[in-house]
Length: 129
Image 1: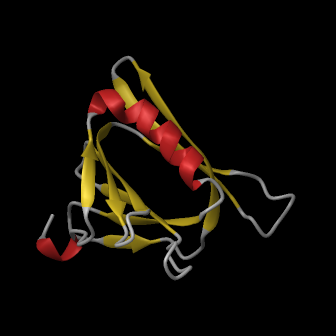
Image 2: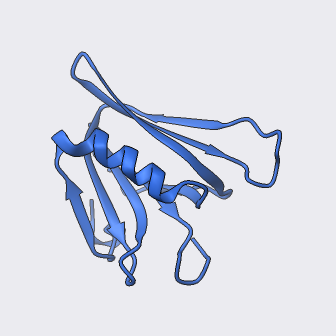
Image 3: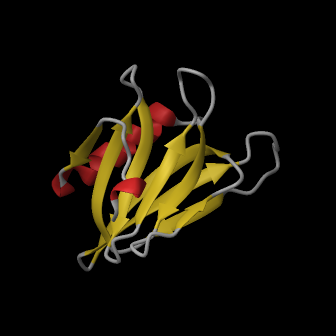
């Protein structure tokens, strides 16, 4: 990735043996926070999700040594909304970005194609994501 797409906020890489516990705890700490995806492709292309949904849960799976992360969100403005389930396969790395106040700002997941999938959370400082 080129330097233009690299995040500037403080970040911490999560050790692979800690992924399942970290994601479970991250989901519990950040449940119901508004969140949306930014995707940074190896080619330099960037995709930003236009709509936010509220974080419901994150599920880690490791089947046959293939690691995946399922991020479950729901539209908090619609009591009858179906959950949105996004699955990231062939996970190679997980990191967390922190806001200046120390709160979690984004969950970063890298796949085997060097795509960085960033789940950006609503800021606890200003209410924006």
